[in-house]
Image 1 (cartoon, rainbow, N blue to C red):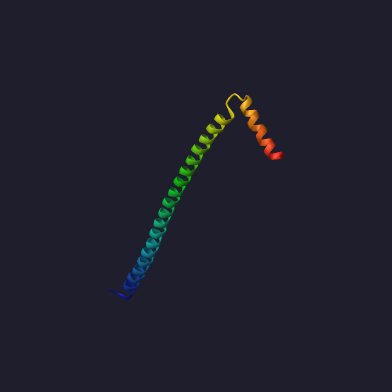
Image 2: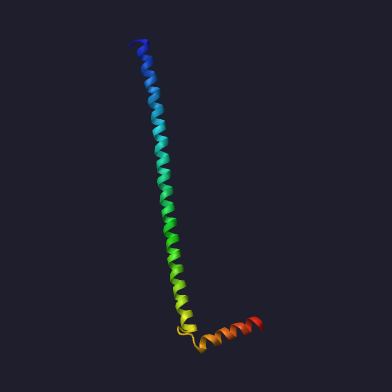
Length: 90
């Protein structure tokens, strides 16, 4: 093997090591991106569950309020409004 061949071989080995290092770094970045996206998906699922629970509670409260005030208005509703005004101004 001549000196030039040895130099080329050495340069090829050096570039191969650099390429291997870049590929290893890219692999770690890809793994980190995957892990982060999985964590964000879990967080979004939890947020969705919280909003679903909030919506169910709000709907239940709305039903209870409509029963308390009566669907057709009437005396019961005016009485509650009167009590609230009396408590507020009195």
